[in-house]
Amino acid sequence: MTERQIRLFGDPVLRSTTDPIPDPGDPRVRALVEDLIDTVEPPGRAGVAATQIGVGLRAFSVNIDGDIAYVLNPVLEVAGEPALVDEGCLSVPGFFFPRLRYPWARVTGVDVDGNEVVLEGDGLMAQALQHESDHLDGKLYIEGLEPDTKREAMRAIRQADWFARP
Image 1 (tube, helix red, strand yellow):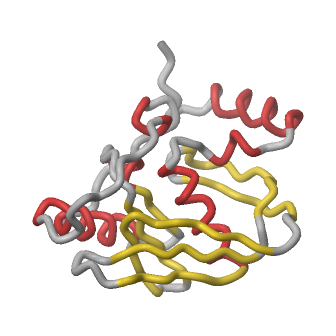
Image 2 (spheres, rainbow, N blue to C red):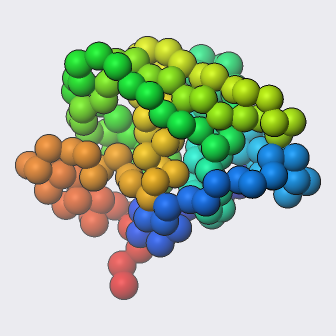
């Protein structure tokens, strides 16, 4: 379909909890999936959640080392001892901050045909699955930063050229 514009920090849709997708085979859901795939495809993008393109449904795509996948209605599981990893977000462009993430993650959900989808892994895959799942719950990665780091992040974000000032 088309690569969609990424919503930026400050857009209320990014703080919204998403709704489950009742009919994965709905043509509108198929179109959403195509847009998510097209939007995550450019190099340097590890994941895109539906909220990041302005859609309040439980869906996201990932692009890990050129392998693109998507999941509808994902349920997240994590394991291991959380560790600090540098993390960025397309909705908070140009910034990377250390935050705690579990070293392994899995999401289970469905595809547009209602078939079970399981995405799992460690490293960047684990980080992306947690990050995109957070988006579907209306959370941005900066919310999970240590307090001092979060203050630094917010100060830097407010000074960014792209930041919308009221």
